[in-house]
Image (cartoon, rainbow, N blue to C red; front, side):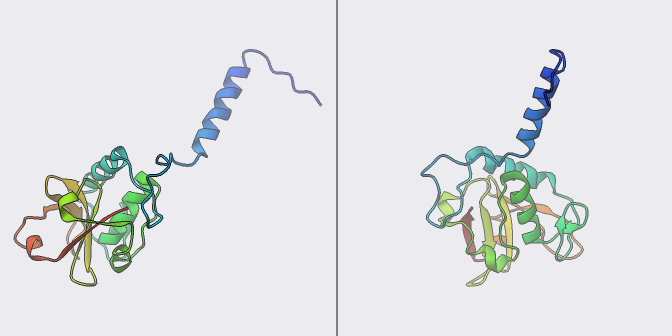
Length: 166
């Protein structure tokens, strides 16, 4: 069976095929040799900035324990999972305790946009996304909303802090 295309239909068919192929393609990978020793992909500067911008756009979303969508609300790890999946194609662990082993440990002096900030002693109890200039976005507690706070604030500056870079 032969299929004959009219010359006017060929560009439309080609465009449709290319569009479908683009929708099904995997997200771009970082250049070879940039993966950290933990086996997780290193985020590009552009991805890290996109993560921060997306997190900032979710400020005001209601807190909900176990929540992981803008419509249903977020808890702190649900917010992180949603942002990283939608902007970088990464699936972070679901709990804060598990996030403490995600990506690479980074010294606080090397903190950059898109890094995870984890609060608490040996086993972290809260986490957020660093958005630059000493600020981070997080889903703090029941009855609240996703908000931006500063690491230098009265409460957060007294909390043990660790930094992870997915």
